[in-house]
Length: 244
Image (cartoon, rainbow, N blue to C red; front, side, top):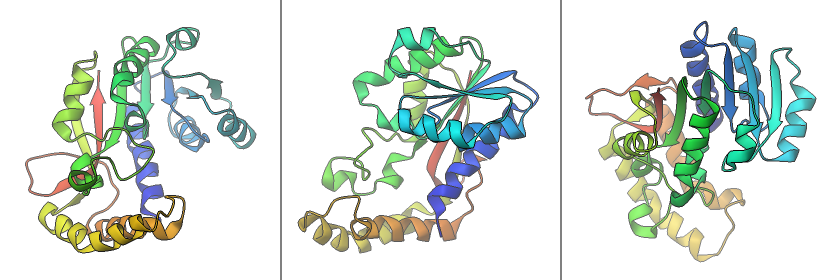
């Protein structure tokens, strides 16, 4: 009943499978409350460093997660000087982060990941904009108020490759029939429109009702497993790129 949580967990499972045995030091940028970084420490042979700017999140991470191969650092991922002071790593994972930066900050963010990991791998995720925010054409912005840009597969590949990362493979989660998905979204839009008219905050659960219903319907269509994107007609709601 909480598909977003299991989708996020599945990305770390995927990263652990890809990186285990092939890397000595992994950075989780941004690590939030730390459970994903802790998962990587427990399920790979690597040392793991969680990086986040939020003091409260880091305090919680340090309190609950004390694996001997896990450390947490406070740093702004847009600050080159702060990133330069951190240890170098062999691999970086960055989940649910890219879409939180405005367009003008994305090159700096990706350059800092390269500074942190000059010769290794990057595993990075983003919502697939057209599916994750189906009302963008009507509203002119992503559904989540905390997201600046959500990329489709070609846009994600372009932004990564134009900023120093070579995309080796593109993966996805929650593969759905896009025609059917957009029909569901269209049917739910009157609810979205009326709730917006009331001026409800996104933090109010009822204001997220159309999103919750649409996302739960999508969860019924497919598992949260991260799989390679092929030429199949079904399209993923979430994207994950493996880069070097």
